[in-house]
Amino acid sequence: MKTTKEANIPPPDPMAYDVGLLFPVLFLVGIGIVMVYSASSALALKKFGSDFYFLKKQALFSLVGIVALVMCRHFPYRLLKPLAYPILLVAFGLLCIVHIPGLGANVGGATRWIRLFGFSFQPSEFARLALVIYIAYSMSRKIEEIHDFYIGFLPHLIVLGIFTALIIIQPDFGAIVILGAITWIMLFVGGVRVVYLGSVLLFLFPFIYLFMVNAAYRTRRLMSFMDPWQYSTDEGYQTVHSLMAFGSGGIWGTGIGKGVQKLFYLPEPHTDFIFSVIGEELGLIGVMVILLLYAIILYRGISIARNARDEFGAYIAVGITTAIGLQICINMGVALGLLPTKGLTLPFLSYGGSSLLMSMASIGILMNIGKTN
Image (cartoon, rainbow, N blue to C red; front, side):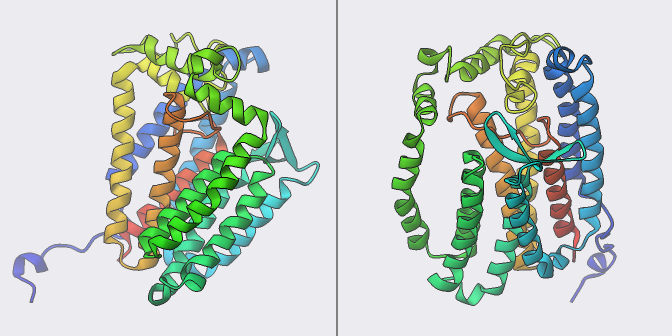
């Protein structure tokens, strides 16, 4: 029986926003706009004749991302259940369209984007969220049979395998690692037997090894990871200049706009290596602020997953939080020389419409799960 004090407590407002989650996200997006301009102004001026080129596009991406966040915040997440398979099919279709001449865009030897009407979109970003929704829906329906190999494990492995086959020919090994890790963690949280999860890792290890050594550039990339300074003029070039950026930043940084490594030394300073530019210009203090904001987001994601009203919402929250957390760790690990080089953006900070749009939409879904009774 409720006490008088408990009875007077107003119920949570379903239209309210989770400020503890919204504030760090918007703060990071704001920092991202500033740092994208700082990191890209010289490159944009040389390539496009305007130092504001990437700034304008990132500001537009941010506005679209905020709209996506608001829409997903007010879209009941339970309605994603009947849409799980249609969303999965759309993701499959987009990954196929990438390989259609005239629609798929080849950049740097990789065909990862769909280019249409002057806009580019990376389907693997959408595939990540689609996979999370599908696995959450599938596991929520199979709670009693989740320990069965043919029901709780194999179907999810098949879907992951199809996505992997489509992405590996792009190629985008970083996206494959993210999808595989998300699937493994979600199935582990859902209660799939550890022996199944462990067995598939042992089975795949020889194929992963052959894949890594099959191409000379991948082998060189692994060698440069072990000793980037020995390969400082080729495969270790990015890592060396990234570490130099962090070393130059010191405690307080050189100041916004005063970094040196972004001036045609560090490749892709506004996308894959924006964390390095932050380390140089904002120093250790700036890096710690970024880490704190990310920690708050991940903490809120875990809290939402733990307090979700149903398994479907809990699994989606786990998947989204895992996806964001893995992307953060891999991007920062690459920038700090702790992981081999991978083309993954830093959520909410790096330049890129696809990544920002899907990250903001994911946060909106998280907020809806957290506020739905």
